[in-house]
Every structure is written in C-alpha cells, then in structure tokens.
Image (cartoon, rainbow, N blue to C red):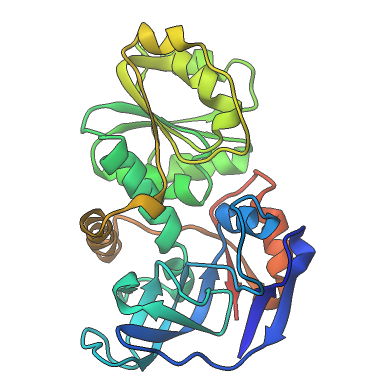
Length: 319
C-alpha cells in the first residue's frame, strides 16, 4: 500500500510517499481502507519535532474515513464493508490502509461523505470537548470563537448555535467571515482589525463574553482576558509559543483559563463525545466544511497550507 512516511523531523518536504506492506489486524483491531484523510495542525507540530521523540519512520495522522477492510480476533461490532470514520490510528491515516483500535473507529452516517467523515475525529471532538466538557457552555451564554472559519472553529460555531449559545466568531478574511455567518454565528469580526475587541465589548453592552475558545493563545490570551465577563472561562485549544498575561485581569473577573487536549480524554468522556458527534451529523446539525481536497502525494503542500492561517474549513487528502 501507499503511505506517507517521515524518516526525520523537519519541514514539510520530509513527508515522503512510499510503498509498505499492508497491515494485519490483531485482537481488538480493524484495518480501514482510507478514502479521505483529515489534516490537522497538530500533525505539522509532530512532523517538525515539537512533540518530542518518535520512532522513525512513522506515518502521520489520526483522522480519516473509509470502509472496514479487515477484522481482528474478537471484533464483533464491525463487519467488513461498514462505513466508518477514524478518530485515532495505530499505524497512521496518511495511507491507503490504516490499522486502528476497533474502539477508536466510529460509524459514519449515510448522510456524510468520506471527506466529511475525515474532518470529524480531531476537529469535532476538540470543539465538543472545548465547548461542553471543558468550557461548560450553557444555553443563553455569549461566546467568542477565535479562528471560527477553521476546522475546529466551524464545528464549534455549529455546536454552539445548536446548543442555544450566542456566538461571536472571528476570521481573517471576508470569505471566512461570510462562512462563519452562514454557519449561524450572530456576528463575524475581523481579528486583524485593531478595534475588533472593542466591537466585542460593544456587542455585549460592555459586559464581555462568558466563554472564549482560543485557537492561538500565544497571540490572543492576554487580550482575551480584557473582554471576558465576570466568572468567564477561556479554553486554550491551540498555541504556537509563549505569552504574557496580567494576572489582575483574572482576579477582577474571577476568571478561569482552562487548557485542553483530547489526548487526556478518559473512556467515558471519549464515548460521550463521539455518540454526540454521530447523532449531530445524522440529524443534520453538524456538517464538516471541506475547503480543499488534495492527492495523498501532496501531503507536504497540505502541511504548508494548514498553517497559513486563512482557512475556510478542512483540508483533506485523497489516497
């Protein structure tokens, strides 16, 4: 089978298309024939070596969607030919075939394409975790979603609106802001504008927002605190470096700054997230936005694009 492999940390050009033997499932495992691969920013950090040592060579990727190809001993919840999306892979999803724990593969509703299924694992689970499990978002609250036009952001806007929250989203282009509004956000602001935080305060009659989902904390965290309402929460979903805050901005608001990563999910929270995701997709309340489809061989280009910061949905690779 064809796979993308990394033999050393570095720039996107270390992603190499190679041929390797097909995987064989062990007990409790399945092999999924991947029809679409979800590309996430975290994979660019892993490729660059920011997440510590790895055993080389390795194949990136945890997100994908396709057809169950083979079952290992003891797997009874799946049949060969079932449609599924992958939320974690043992062998990596940048490949034609992916070896997976059967419990980390989930039913793909018939109303979702494989490309849409490939956008569910990390983005939808991150949005759900940040909004509900870490952020404690409640009906009637007002929230700010930074980077609302990206993979996680587009999911968060839809989930928040379906849950009855008032949403202010930011995006760096008019095309992105148009998408944010189309997904249901009441307001879409330009985070490149020097006055966008004043707009947030004006829109909330000076009270500030109850919840912020922060995708780039090293740039925004200190400023986020100045538009947070009393007893408000900031959930840090992404950061590309260090930052500085004024602790008094937390004190005067009784504010919470909460970090998160879906790597810390226990089995109960993990199951709750994916049951919710499948139901939301099935009912038409959650629809992944696909920005671009590229061949698997262009994984390096996908890594360059995903970090450019002007996303309008999800980039997927097609094996």
